[in-house]
Image (tube, rainbow, N blue to C red; front, side):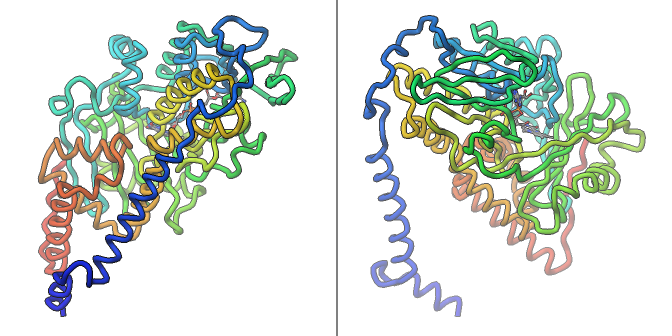
Length: 484
Ligand SMILES: Cc1cc2nc3c(=O)[nH]c(=O)nc-3n(C[C@H](O)[C@H](O)[C@H](O)COP(=O)(O)OP(=O)(O)OC[C@H]3O[C@@H](n4cnc5c(N)ncnc54)[C@H](O)[C@@H]3O)c2cc1C
């Protein structure tokens, strides 16, 4: 039967339905990409409506009012101010302030921190630690901890930095660059006047108002302002816990590790080490598993640290953890992140990868992209919805459209946890370079479609078949490399 199928595949391409289907799908895909490129609008296609905005001089209003000075808003503020634009950055809290997070800062964000001149300072002041020894533990108990420093060189794979320090550093960099950072300034509302083309921004605890040409909602996962304005239309979908583990009370020796539990997939938990040897223990609940809801977060947080053999061993019997803190995750990208004179950036626009629950790097990347886009839009003096859409399309092209693959892979992992075992076995076989390439895909630096490249497909398929055979024969020997 199988031989007949293989023989039939070897028939001339034109006459076999499988080849015809593959060629048709590929042609349609290429045609769609070509059409998209050909029909792509440019900012210069739109009429100039506010010619005076080209001038980078002080006006009676702000060029841009950014609501929220997290990584998205502050990065945007930094690059806008650098471009000479008059930017108001409104933040409801006072820095430094806590933000519940795993504190894992990926390569893309590190590059931007380097560009802003913040990275070296954070390391020097012992506020951030480069993660060198890191890896993963699969649902079937296979694990690998590799080293990344020698492989990656100048730009590390990840950094552990408390948001207390990270967010303050980015916000202060924006301020130094010239953005008008106003702390303790929670925004209550914003109203647009079409005649003047200006927003009036209202604060929560003050009668003070501000006028701006463009409004940016960068107020995090709840996305209250963009929801109020009717741009974002759904609540956040995932959730994540955090608990710091006191230095000297745990047994974890690596810098970071991701732990998958088969009953909680596609979610996972993680341990990450800070410069002072404190740990960050996090549990990410990612949608896609009908048996796990966001209400189960306290259960999983407690269960994994006590019952998961790898996590409980890493923590040790004397580990002192702070009380669980939790916050929501808005995953997978919002379908719309723009409107006349408005952009939505970072978590507020759902820029968290469903495979990892991480979004600092996308928030910063989008903040930088939005700044460049706004500077260009101001040069052309048009902020109509169709112009602002070019920003939405740009971040979708860069990383957002990849989120749909992440959702699909999450479903695969939930249904077939053995795939994660096979991937972990492949990483263990191929070593640190393979782990670094895997991390680049997981963190969205490289599109998820790269998982279909032969260097991944061949080795993971080999490990998959070998695991299936060993499990079928009952001779599977766990190649677990103990966490050192
Ligand atoms: C528990 C947990 C763990 C996570 N772990 C990681 C991780 O390890 N790595 C990673 O990359 N990502 C992680 N994430 C995701 C990451 O936290 C977000 O992607 C990132 O914070 C997005 O930045 P942002 O600037 O868009 O939003 P935020 O960081 O949420 O910043 C929004 C800012 O807006 C302010 N604000 C809100 N409302 C108003 C208002 N009305 N007026 C004025 N200001 C306002 C807030 O005070 C805040 O400062 C985690 C998330 C959670 C919940």
